[in-house]
Image 1 (cartoon, rainbow, N blue to C red):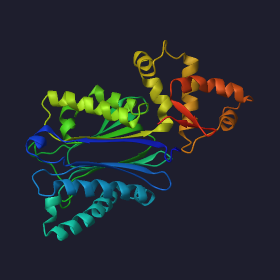
Image 2 (cartoon, one colour):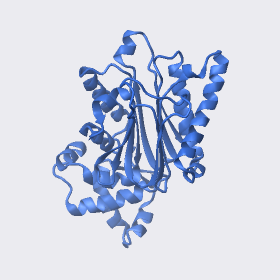
Image 3 (cartoon, rainbow, N blue to C red):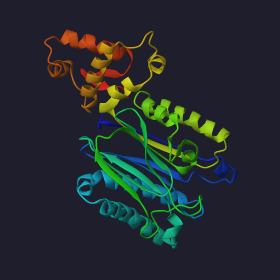
Image 4 (cartoon, helix red, strand yellow):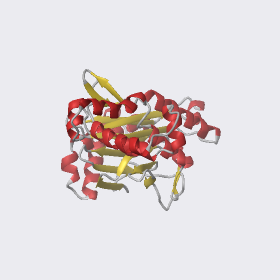
Length: 333
């Protein structure tokens, strides 16, 4: 199947043990949206458990925010941060208000947090955060950077929501700063992120997301959550990850040699020459969401023989980093 976006996304949510004990559903929701021109947005929302319609509120919040930020990216990007946040939150509040009216309830009963990011194929991005949870980026140096965590002066167990008038928010926009961004709810945040930085497991999650299938990543995240539960986490847990697949080669080079050998079942690590070739080829292939051909790669590499290009691609095929379908080459899903 042809890739329709430059970006790979992983979404995961799981009901917390405290909710299971109380026979409550998971009140976290995650959502992805891909616009016609390849702008890809992911959102995560944690419904306020003390309110009646927390689950519905988080579902609407995540879905509307991701859709709006992807569809209206160009318009939003040119605005100042406060106006961007105001427009996105307003877009969320409209359906929340309609649902509240339908149920004969106050909109506060649908309160939820919001973490959302939208990435444009040209490298530009928008990141919006309201309430608790954390947003962490994997930068171009393959280092984890805490982009946003909720800090406030009140009690530790209090937060703000999209339904709070004039709510505090964090918004960042930029270009080509991150290979990957992960959003997480406050359940795992408590164990994995603080003002000093992110746990090494977050970096590992972001790196593996480039190379493992969505099903394999779900298993990896589930294993991480089991570890957190064993250490006392009882809240719902959710993650949303977005990877810029043009950066696959750069992320590959940032893996430790030992982990690279283990991940790709290599007898020995890639040579410097193969690593340089891999980064160049993966950047070219990752930049083509509808795939590329041997001929196109040969021309872009400025070499004269398709057979040489095929030889350069061979180890990437063996490592299952790329795949060939109907004469076209893609980054492997």
